[in-house]
Length: 439
Image (cartoon, rainbow, N blue to C red; front, side, top):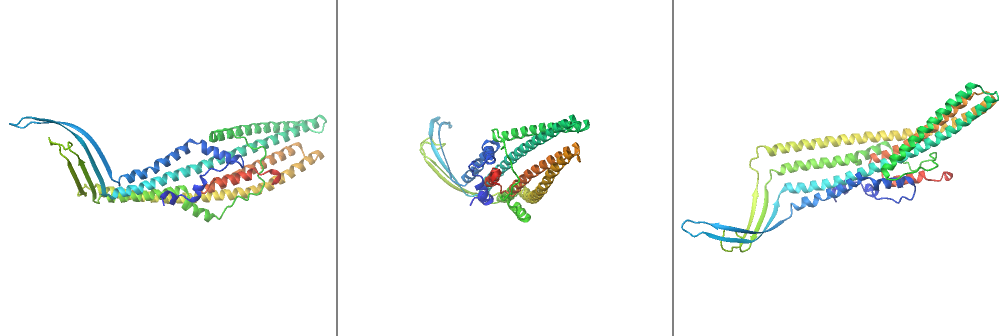
């Protein structure tokens, strides 16, 4: 089994397979981002580069056969002898085979680690892009809902302003009431403009990720139950983060690679055994005026006798690198656990806050209705109605934002433990696209 399959969970391999974008817009957005992102394509190319390290390292352990051809002009002058001049040409074949070279074997193991690391880096980049594109779409939905609520608020304030003007004309409202209504109307108009600008900004950000314009759905309902959210206990999430998060997995590979560096440094003190052979047919033997065929074979054993302390220094250096990698792995493990706790708390906080805000919205709706009736009966002022409208709008806005924060926190929680997949995106997409009338 390769190191890539050893370190990368099976779920990640399944997650990398694209799903059919037939459910709704979210899954289509994620798939578009995966196909459009140039950095992810570069990370995919890095996998191919890393995989080739293995055959390159393996080749240093296999026989090497070289051949050549040459033509040489020779002139030999000898005292009291005529000068000999002749041409010499021919070809030669040489064979080299390492018998024992422990450093090359260690390099082969490191090539396997490099290949696994490239695949992990790609999986991490893939998951980060899925999370980023999903969050960008949720931001677009939040901005669209904010704009819709701003329009509703503006419409309600406009109606109240028109009613106040009508009542003032009949002597039932004062000029101060009209001015207060006009002030709230200007604020509502400005709020709608801000919401439109934010919506446009979110659309452009998503277009940069996907390469196409994305239109949010006309109706968004987040008040339904969320059966797809399955938050396990905190300790389960933390244990998974400490063993499976991408920083931890990459840290484990770095520790193994540092250990192999130490083994490679030790190999500098081991003997190296090589076998070489050559064959030179007639006419290729150097130094002979007559055609001569030579064959040779040699077994060599070499070992360092004195290196001036370089081998010991190199070993101390690699052992320090091994200790560094272990400390970095410990830091990555602690950070992954801390980040997982943070996202778990954010998710639960947002979920509890959503429930509380639902009740607040219901109470504000009832309060606004009662205030309007009181205004018509003369027991409430125009300012009371405007304040009730503003409180209702603010609570609805907070509820929508908290809902999206909860969804985003859950996706981030799954990403923190390297478990975010297109299956999760599809479940969320199906939930977002359920017909409101059927919920």
